[in-house]
Structure formats: structure tokens, C-alpha cells
Image (cartoon, rainbow, N blue to C red):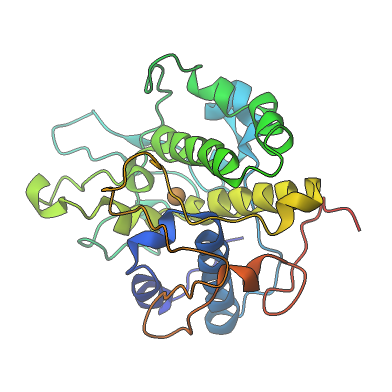
Length: 280
Ligand SMILES: [Cu+2]
């Protein structure tokens, strides 16, 4: 499945220059779309856009087929984090294995893909174990019990979002490469989480859930507010009371700004895609 494509890396880095892109649903949709478009234009990719429905694998996340060892279709498993002092969780199996030499990451320093699969419990107080939160029940409640309330839906998605990043660890969790002094990574973690190709499968899944929520009830479809994680804290720099459906989001120097309203409907221009399990 994954074909190595030179040039995408640099494109990606420029798409990535925006921390905001990681924070909310519509930015996510456009961001994933830009990456997908780049794969098609620059690499000639013409297949479907994959997503990882981790809720199906929640009972045994470690055994999920996405982590298979096959160099042809497997994304590889966890890395070696402890066999020697230099071990840096480098992924040694699957298509992106460091040993194949055809997948080298450039940012924040040249390094091989890293993962450190770890099931975290008690990350937040009074919280269910990570793998239960990622299960179908929580997902169903999030999409079906939050009608008309974008903020509550967004909060549930943020929790799911963070859990997967943290479970996979390594690049996806923004762990600093060992070869770089910890201080040099300060504030940069988010900028290299997309190093792991799994990033796109995870974000496509979140986009799919937003789409599901939008179609669950008419009052959800265009429900959007720019409020991020902490609405009670007005000093949070991520709090943007001015954000609304027509607010132009700028991404990078290469792409035109886009307003949330333009990406509400995945099935119309400019997006034009449909999820395989969408109702006609
Ligand atoms: Cu993310």
C-alpha cells in the first residue's frame, strides 16, 4: 500500500506550520484533504483515503491489524525503546521500518519513525481506561447524545483524539527524538506528530465521526463554534470567540484560506468525497 514519495515531506512541512490545524474539526477536515490532494498530485495515488476505526480494535489495541508487520501493507508495530541506552523506539517492522531505508523523516531532525505503544490508565482523573474510552459505546454516545451541542461533541472528540496519539507514542505523541536535546523540542511536539503515517488514518477517522454526527440530526449539520478546549478560560490563547462558520482559516503560504462553512458538506465542492458507510 504505501509508496514512498519524495517531495511530499517538504510540502507537508509547509502545510504543517499551523498549530491551530490540530485543534478543531473543520481545520482537521481541510488539513487531511490537503494532504490527500498532495498524495494524488505528487505521488499519483488514486486509491481510497483510508481511516483507522480504532473503536473496532479497542479490546486489543496492540493486536490491531494496522500494526501488522508486512512490509507491503502493514504500518508496523511498536519500536524498541529499551534494549540499549540508545534505543529510541524505532519501528522495525512494516512498510515504514527504519531498516528498509526508504522512509526517513526529516523533522525536527533526520530520524526513523518511532512508536511506543502503551496503554495509559488514569491519564485524567475519574476516567475510564483508555481502551474502553476508545470503544464503540463511548463513540456512539459522543455522536448520538450530543445533538445540537457542538462544544460537547468536540470535547468528546478531543478526548478520543488525544488517547490515540498518546497510546501510539513516539512521533505520533510528539516525543522528542533522543538525538535532539529535550530543550530543542520545546513547544514543537505538535509540529511532528504527522510524521507517523498513522496520523492521517487517525484524523480521517475523526473526520468520519464528525461527518456521522453532522448527519445524525439536521441541527448538527452546520453547528459549529470556534471554541476550543477550555471555554471557561478566556485567557487561553486557543480561545477564539470570534471564530464562526465564515471565519477564514489560513493554512500555509501555498493554499487559499478556507471557511468552515465551505467544508461542512464532504459531498460537495471542493471536497467531493463520501464515507463508505455513509447513507446514500
Ligand atoms: Cu492529532
